[in-house]
Length: 171
Image (cartoon, rainbow, N blue to C red; front, side, top):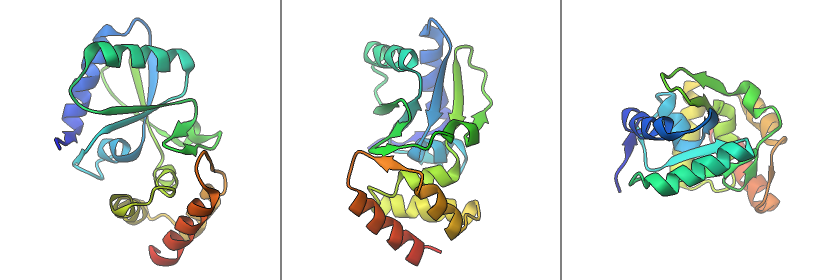
């Protein structure tokens, strides 16, 4: 599987930027956020949350038209994977400075990167969680408090079990 570096990701987004008829907001999540923050050198796929419905619809339309040759997952409203992000997620996400005319990029806050990976919590997610905890000196209490603000489409029991594992073993 081809991995995508930050440079590669930005090159793909330039193609979108040139074709967008209006400005949109993309929020980098998961491995994409970690790549944008410099925590990872590359990501196996590209993941964005797209908060506004019209932006989401336009991005999906362009994705199908452009067919960039790399998987891009896009999540509407305030969702990532099976998780519903807390209401304030945009206010604590960081702005990514770019030269795009029509794309504004925000990067999910590291504590939200961690919390958005709890439900799936596969081996790669655990490594990503460890990296965020170490690099950003996240505290156990901070992750627990933030995780309590999350809702999900998936199982609450799995989320709680995985959260307990993380809190007991990764701090």
